[in-house]
Length: 379
Image (cartoon, rainbow, N blue to C red; front, top):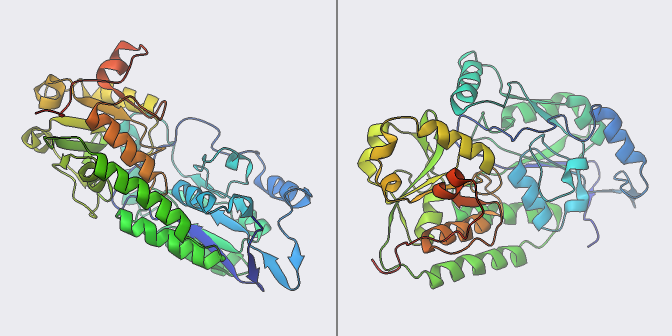
């Protein structure tokens, strides 16, 4: 697909709205600095590479050059067929494969490794002191001269804030790129974000939207559950937080009834009393920004609380761990993958997404097994 053009000097940063009240985003341990320890050199290398040259000028118009400051936005851009138009990313963008070689434009102001409580305390301390949680590599952004930036405005602890991006564009980017801030709270909002982004860069978004909507409709149509189980999705473990925004919608479409989260509303802090009173038949743990391995550790810590064994889902063996970082926490096109994973869990089917989820019993045993249990098909 030929890359779309942006007229004149106009630029547009594409970013995505993250979880509104999530107070922690902890990338899995890795190279937070990105492909190169010198982001400026990295940017210049890309410019000098004849295969990935992004400063070509055609008849007075510039090639579209997109910087995505959020993983979900990167996935949205790629799903629209614009992967080759991306020139920069956040330190957390890692999908689809290959984006890791792009210059990194953001960094965390805190150590994102540690327990759930340690991460929460580090982030909370910065917020209490009115300090930003993430920063921008301003020289890298200037060197890339993007034409589009994707950013977010809902959550200061999930990505660089919209205000910081606006200030940086005004003060440090002579090209004055237009900023697009995406704000999904539901699947309908996701469809609109895809439409907004596609229209902004001259790509027809409707085929992608229709394809995703067909998959959603198919899950809803095929739901075999006679009994709709009571479900609680946990977005952080210490302190406890229930998952909101689009997650209750995924639960509903897959045949369950979310007990603590509310569709389209911010994720909320909860107490152990709330969790016990919810009497969930299924407990799904999806800490924001945590890989499956990190989620195992978080649940191991959570299970040390004496109240853990009183939970109905624990007693009935219906606790599941998911890779929230790659799926449920990212409001991009792979939310539909997350819906299919939710259906696998509630319907008791083997996973088509290796490494995306596992029953707690499997995690504790540390063995490979078919992910099937007795669920709610005939209750």
